[in-house]
Image 1 (tube, helix red, strand yellow):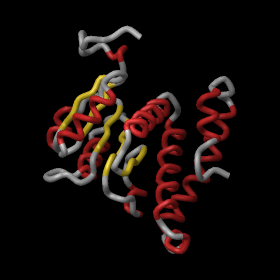
Image 2 (cartoon, rainbow, N blue to C red; image 1 turned 180 degrees about the vertical axis):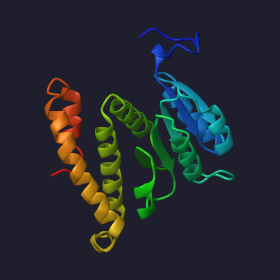
Image 3 (cartoon, rainbow, N blue to C red; image 1 turned 120 degrees about the horizontal axis):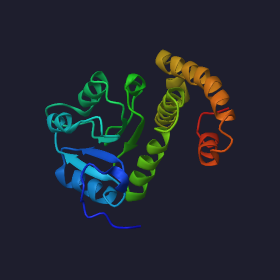
Length: 201
């Protein structure tokens, strides 16, 4: 691959645009360094700066949840309220709880995060951008369902109405997505990834 020396900031042929947001500046810079070989990366060290850097060209946001000032949850709400069509991955030390069900993120990584984990999740959500809205939503919901199942006991899950609704939405979307995927026989990589998803029947 030819090296891109940063010439032509508007040229995304060297990679998609990623915004890394973390109040631990060294960690944000580390994540950015891991990604910059394949992506155009910017880093923000607080929620306000993140929102200032948001643009339609940003395709992926890696977002810490617990930050002073504007929290990651608030930044996520603003990104969705402002209508940005980007994938958002929460990268955080906060273990997932039932509150994640209504949050508008696409994936969730719990720190500490390895370079391989970070690159894998960015590549995964990048692939989702190519597919229809139903499929993107299905991936996001299955990710939440899988997270909760790894963190909560069966009894906690059974007793939670929001989790029950989440399962219903997953089943409903799975039917619609199955129909879409059946028309994508030539997209072997996607179909393979889809079949490997947790929570599928």
